[in-house]
Image (cartoon, rainbow, N blue to C red; front, side, top):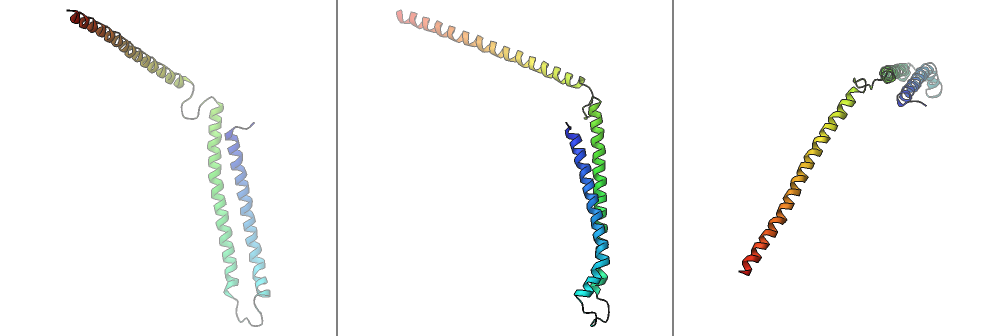
Length: 161
């Protein structure tokens, strides 16, 4: 079973192969267009008996074809270089994970243990504070009914007099 990093590396390499193949096909199509298209245009679009000079369209076809092929090839090349950099960074990340490092610059589990201990200490402090508050509330509740009873007794005594 592949890890997500291995899957991403595989996907990036497949995309690079696809872009390279497309660039080669575009260059091949440009060469074919340069070789065949002018003669086809002269044969079927223009009447050679009426032409005194070569049409400008026949001059532009090779230039446009070469520009498109060059642009696409350079674009594919730059994209492949970018993907290859991404693959190399993913490979180093995968190697770090295999070595037991987490990839974020913190290796080992000591940092996690320290964070857990901090949380444990904070939790204990909060529990102690909660216990103190509950104890104070319980003390206040026991004092209030006692005061009420004493006031009731005194009011009963005063009413008897």
